[in-house]
Image (cartoon, rainbow, N blue to C red; front, side, top):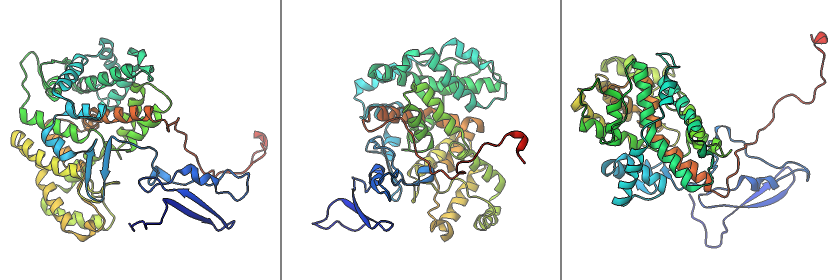
Length: 436
């Protein structure tokens, strides 16, 4: 980007060649202009004014946010200013959750208090357990989760008091605490197993593993390597700026819906295969390849446009996804305990070949967070229908952080994008017996 001259102003001059008029709009920090500043550009004085047309919001900033910073060209991801690499190495998930929700890393006393609050709220109302019986045995876990979270809004009607800071905090703690419980209940229902209730002497992820995999009354002790691996994965998935589901959370929240209802909507967005289903698609691809000797042929078919290379590339990152490096190391730690996933060798060689191929490098197609996460989840015993649920548990922290930030932002109003109408002009109604 060219340097600004000493005599320049932070404005953008626009010449409308239709009218010959000149306009000047302010350039804000971050090289953005206000879309409403374009409204002054008109052909006739009574025109609506100019709008920006941006399908899928690929180049539109809808908010200012201090939660997560991404520099896709440099492969940088930071929560509240802290590099994701440091947080994944040195923190646990609840400490990162406090950072995202409160804006700062907690003191020892603050962390102890937050962990106690979350631990105290892990149980769900018994009627939620009864709700599970209404689902078929083969109901998708994410569908059960969305319904369960939406149902929680009826158990906590005070959640509608979104203008009260203390009430907001109580609901956020409840959501963080209950998400693993609801997820474990969905998993056990799918397996036809009796529900296992929270045991609060475990850590956040240890308790989750206990509720998932405990059989009978036998004491369960989560493997510390797997417990830590799940903690790292939760940290990596806690937030990722203004993606599809976060935007859904903000848009629904802008109507002043309660956080449970908004969260259910965000989870529905995550449920889509283009968002929360990417790691499942990677597993299908690796299974289809079947053997390392088939990789060259697969690569060539991708270049011909016959297949897609799943788990590579990202809408934001134009360099190596920083989360992928961390997950790759975590995968090796997990496989030391579980035994190596047979698909790992295919994944490693596929990555090595693709990163040396100019076809992929020139297109900025580097491994993303989904390339290895599915391998880890599969090795830990999770069925593929649990993958988006495992994404939703930690991402609920990011959604809530973004939701509250939106509520406190004086510039935000109820979301209402414009459209460019492309339908028919005015037409006369024709009675049905005269329609050809």
